[in-house]
Length: 181
Image (cartoon, rainbow, N blue to C red; front, side, top):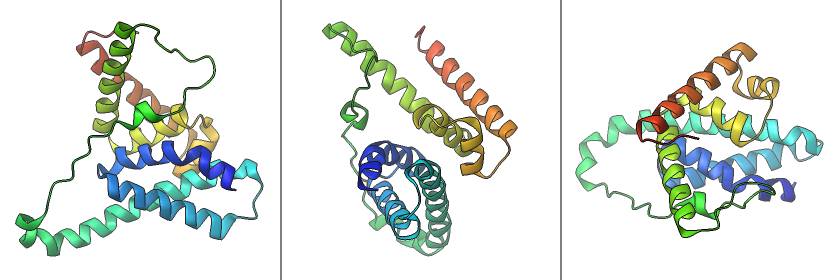
């Protein structure tokens, strides 16, 4: 269980960060999701953990939004007292590089890769929630269509549609910035 949680913690954090756009809330969401997985499904086989964890993570994100909606009714009057969080750390740079992935060898290549990753990250943030959820599960978590559909609680056709729309949106964003992959 601990090996699985260690392997998904950074990606889960980034996924939650894209969804809620608040670093501290994203950490809380990931921690809550990991605790729920360990408490309720600690005896499940390792092969079932990725899908279970994704489902728990997405439900925890939805719960966060539900709580925010209720809180916002009461905190609107106190908005002048809220402070803005400074999120200056780029977590894409801290992710481990997979075997065989592109790694630039020149400073120019590193700069280009950083700029492209920033454009992609901004594009992911702008995706509608269901498209972002499907895209991240399919291409970041490397889940197949059936697993993604089960984790999202929708049909396989919906997953394909959400992923297609997300990739077209990201491709358009890259093309608008002059990036050809």
